[in-house]
Amino acid sequence: IDAMGKKHKNNGSRQQPQSSLKVVNAAIEKSKAGAKGKQNASGQGLISQVEVAFKDNRFDDALALIEAVRRSGEVPKLGAVQRWVRLADLVGEEKQVAKLLAAIMRCVPGSNGPMGAPPGGKNKKDKHAIRRYPDFVPPLTPSQRAWLAAAAPAGGLAQGGAGPVHQGEGQEGAHAPDAGGASTSASAGAAARYEGAFTLVPQDGATQPVKRPPNWQELKIWRSQPGVIRFGVDPRVQRVDVPFVGGAFVLCGVLSPDECAQLVAATEWLGYAWDVDYNFNPSNPASAAASAPAAPTAAPTPAPKAGDPGKDGGKQQHPLLSAARAIAGGDRAAGCVWLADDSLMGPIYRRVQALLPQKLCGGSLGGVNVRWRFYRYDKGNVYRPHVDGAWPGSGLSPDGRLVHDAYGDRWSRLTFLVYLNDDFEGGATTFFTPAPDDPSALDARGVRPCAGNILCFPHGDTTGSLVHEGSAVTRGAKYVIRTEVLYTNAGPPNRQPAAPIAQPQAPLGAGGAVGGGEGGG
Image 1 (spheres, rainbow, N blue to C red):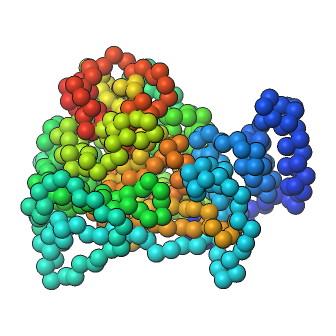
Image 2: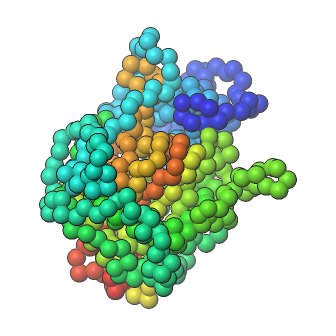
Image 3: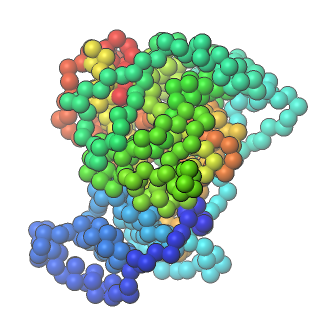
């Protein structure tokens, strides 16, 4: 198992030595004959040739072609970058993966500063292809200190490293429940509390994007009755910038331990599904071509997941699992989807609204997407290196059906990652950047999860493509919510709602309770 947590096999399909320089020079010469110098005589541009090289296992050629794309000044689209990252991660050998990912990131403005040639120098002291640094630990807020003191008054409190701190609105330190018993009490009364509080959201195929390939089974999406989660008094949230990721920041102390425990208990009552296909990127449907459909196994706790030993001692892996799931040192997280109503999203948005960028890429803040995707990472689970795509603001039609693009005028620009617990080991959100002193190495720096914190960082084509992973959990289980911060006029132009919907009076701080107040897609 290498530094990226990947298990390797002796792969007989490794490429044979080839003259990559000759291949690239020939590709460039052919491209000059095409339109705008970007296509060869057969209609293949340099970007398309990169994917062909990957699929033919000509990884040195792929590396050289990526460098040729950078030198040509052509900026690959988000979908191409997502596919390249996915294909590079499947190569297997850590050194080769590091070279490919570093080259990909240097092709994209903003992912590692301005476009530029790779450095020529080598770091003689550190020969690791993936150079891992200690995780960044945001400082504790006064509210978090009060919550921890109430849970363990005799214990010490760790102080994390701090970046620039921004104070939010709110009443400081007023809500300090006994965090130690919160999870137990919430779980014990789950059956009585949540029975009848949740309903499935009907999905109208006419308003949903086509998934390629289609899911193996219908994805369950839940909505809840108002008030299913009980929020305390608003804490004063702090914003701390992540020093090694441009545009990234942590909103500290947004949720109390009790609020986090309620969300975990509710989703465990609903049940998590293994290998739910969350990889579809609506901003570029073709990018899902390399994704696998969901495995049909549901995973209420505890339950064996696909890949556990069967009666015959062999693996019960679903035949359509992708290569990534087959070789990546750990299975994917289990998931649960919950459409947040205003009683859920409203309190959270109220606590963070003033600390979010009010304008981004020419668009104005339009709320947070109410389509909450919960993930549970058990021991060994990892979300391999990837690039997040952009999503529209979802909602409900007047008859309560999911509308994928409920507004037509807003798309996401920031990932909104809510950490619901921290009683586990591993599981950092790790960002990869090209090493400044070695063209064949990557620097890996993580943000340590802390219950109640929210990590925000640019995604899609906002400021480049941030390659990151949900690193492997080594003990316990990690719970997170992934959704997005929306900005008006920030997505594809001239988009219209997929179906007639009742528009909200104003952008719900949550990005869209539509038609009756309970929404999100």
